[in-house]
Image (tube, rainbow, N blue to C red; front, top):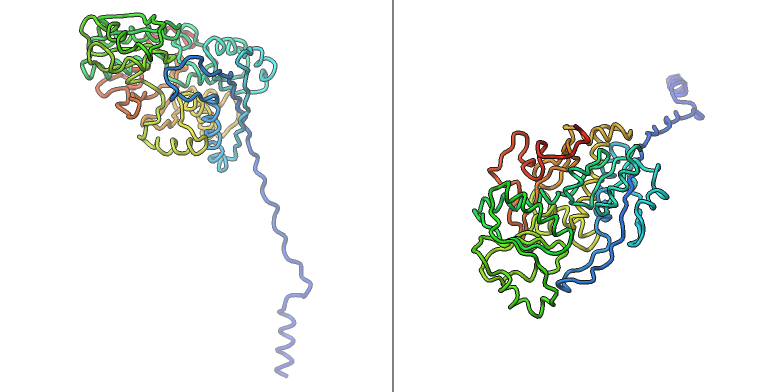
Length: 399
């Protein structure tokens, strides 16, 4: 009797042999926001004249910095459900960037990074003035584009010539090297940098005791020893300041001058947005990552393009949006802050679209200092001691 009861109870309690298992709910499909970024570059030809065969020509400066930044953006995007896509456009060296933009890019992208000269940058941004496009200028250092030729739809990633000159002048003031011998090359870019150096000299109390134009056409490698010594004779000075952006003669000045003096400017001690010797604030990590990706060192243009893409990514992450106006307004807002491996957070100046940032003062194989130099104060941020402050600016798009 007991065994029958137990058997009956077991049959009652046991689940039916053909009971169906409960199905799992379908996976939640999250909407992924896709943010398209265009990169516009004009092909550069190798220079016909170089000082040294050690200077390796890099044809793809800029775009590989953007590619690294897109990878970084998408690492964060895995958690924010955002996907960043880089569309690369390259104009032939003899092509017309404006016509290329009209035919291939106009009306297709909200975010365009340009690595062009000043004239082409201005032509494209003017053409698209009434479009929903935010341009990130990662190629120019011209002061005019931050002043009288500024545009409301353009942000500038690289430090201007004025910012670079101010960085050098601050360090010279710290060292009390106040008497300058200025040597200027014969290209239009050299004249622009010379103008920036003269502005900085006046701003920080430097005195240009001698100014000379470099007009030699000889092969410097054959006659530099004698001619440079004669060329640099004159009044006593503390430092030789060089404006030679093309690198046609500046490297030959060292150790050949009449007086034994340090050299600064475009050669010797330089002011730059990025440099291979920079290893502070986590810079070593990005230096290694970039080198692993490209097998070369990061240049200023690479750094500028990297910051442009990262700025878009930072805005998208913070706003949790892919709406153009939301991202544009956040990038330009006082709340925007971007890490640039330079200690201070980077942000855009409201009055001219310039990215405020620290500037590296570097010798060929060592980082010497980082500007702004300690002791130079500003009511808002010491970064605004470099370049044109709001009260000095002739940019009027936000006034």
